[in-house]
Amino acid sequence: MISRYPVPDLDTIPADLADRIREIVAKTGFVPNVFLALAHRPAELRAFMAYHDAVMERSDGLSKAEREMIVVATSAQRSCTYCVVAHGAILRIRARDPRIADWLAINYRKAPISRRQRAMLDYAVKLSTVPEEVGEEDLVELHAAGFGEEEIWDIAAVVALFALSNRMALAIDLQPNEEFFLMGRLPRPEVGAEGG
Image 1 (cartoon, rainbow, N blue to C red):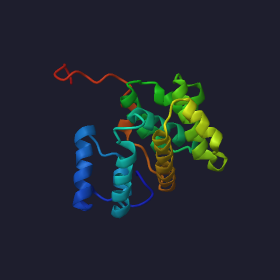
Image 2 (cartoon, rainbow, N blue to C red):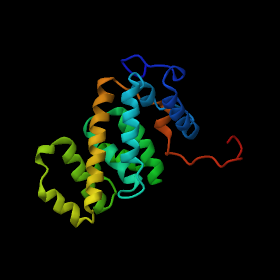
Image 3 (cartoon, helix red, strand yellow):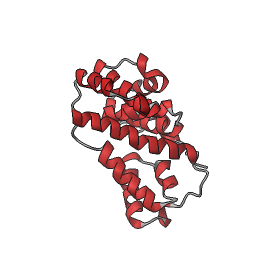
Image 4 (cartoon, rainbow, N blue to C red):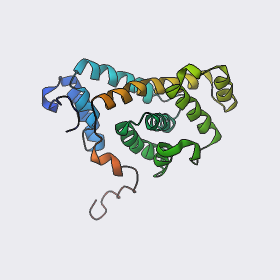
């Protein structure tokens, strides 16, 4: 069981969503459970995917690895197993670091990251956990660490998107795919190598 709600079969969801999910399967080799679980309400899945892509797949501003760092650190604060496991896998791949996601999930303050990344995560975690305490001094810290206004917007947008994602994953008891646990931890076999 991947969700406490009914999970539709890929062949029964609207064609545009099924086609999009098949594109993801072509890249990953499996269907991430989040897509099937959220397909319980196709209009919401469609909106979620569009906003996810707008926030997480941008080519300017924060790097894709930095965006995933925010997801893992803030999702860990919210105890969202699905997002920590799934986005931890994506982070390991994007950062080319098999350990970084574990560091961030346990205690990002002890992680071997740059001063810039630490400032980014300090702000992201504060915005995620105690947003009413965010103030001008936080922006001063971010500017001092080298972030521009658009990058600060990026941080906030990632935090906001995953506030929604964490809460939905927790509400529906979304379970991570087994495939995510090993992704990015071991080198991928060479194409044409024995057994590969």
